[in-house]
Length: 159
Image 1 (cartoon, rainbow, N blue to C red):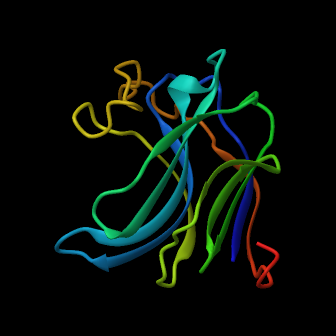
Image 2 (cartoon, rainbow, N blue to C red; image 1 turned 180 degrees about the vertical axis):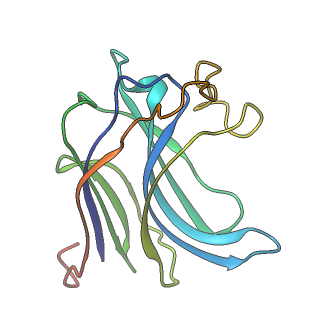
């Protein structure tokens, strides 16, 4: 399988937000046990001289294996994100360049999700920033632009 999205991040927004493309299957709600493969775009790194993304994978677990990856990207421009997932492993690609790979892969069915969220100060300190606060101005907003999103089959041996 391949999960692909072409996105543009709202670089004018304050630091402290996360835009994500991920595959997900909640296996046990009581224990937060899941299979998940993530791309997470962290707003505090969008205008950084060394832009970074977070890649993460959960293997039938409540704990993921995260890696931060420095990429050559202007986040105000379109970014092509792709996760190639098979029984042989996972590849995370940014604009066609592999930024991470794993020889393990979750084995349950998963769905493609795109979202935009703000972590708490105690939840995920790598992404959290106190600059992002609730607005007193009605109608203030930012747009995580999704030009396209797709799930496609990748023939065995071509992943």
